[in-house]
Image (cartoon, rainbow, N blue to C red; front, side, top):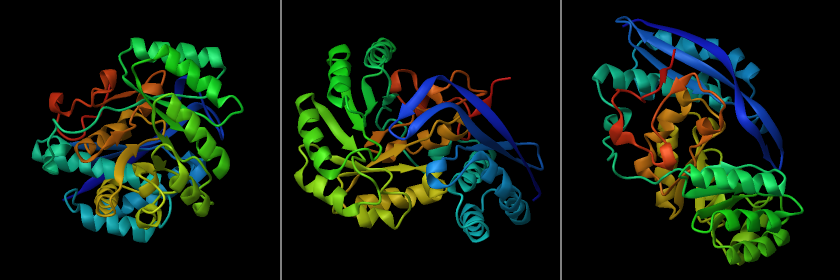
Length: 347
């Protein structure tokens, strides 16, 4: 079988500037990958690299020719284990770039069988959580406005970015505007361990469900300190990047937040999910700010999750790709009328 591959870089403006404790993003640079078989059927995937993990759109574009040469050499979109093994051997790092290839191949493999991706894995589309909708850092009144907009749009689960000197003011504004919402907090490594313990006590008073990555990933002892004293469950994100990190955080977190762009592909993500279960951890699947060419594939893992944070495409001003319906945060896999991931170009 012959396969043809190509990729293109896309600049995606956000609907609003998105700020976390580490900085502000106004444009998401993604790299879209397409893999086409001899019959003209095409699988699509995308990389949403993060400089925090040492990747940029430039590095993705630099390594993709080597990765895609592996795909063309193997020549079989159904040989997913072999291809992903070869991808890791070819480029050890650059997980977002490898994810783009993984997603495109999974999309193509499912399309060739005429089934949605979740059926390729035998998953139940009726299972799985809603995705949260993220409110980035901003002026307090703007956070209040964004919260009201999210509530009006029907999102019952909100993820609030903190890590400022006015965190309680922000969470109070969110709770006032969303009295019935499920609220999760993400500090993105902003607090010291003792600050985190104090903040968890405060956040518990506002009915927060759990707190994500309260302290820097470089301080595993600090994470354990918080976990052992926190009034709320603790989720590990930056502290849990790859498969070996799952057992490493099992005694210092209640939840792991996995991301395709951190771990390098769909097969590796499923391995991490099962490893987390084996260590008694709950599982959330998160994302970067991503086009549906990437997010749609992650949505198909929803039946394996406790929590979902797959709103990356919802933060875009425009997305050239459509995907899985996420209206109101509900991941509507059962409504898909397309095979593969469901991602498709709008023009």
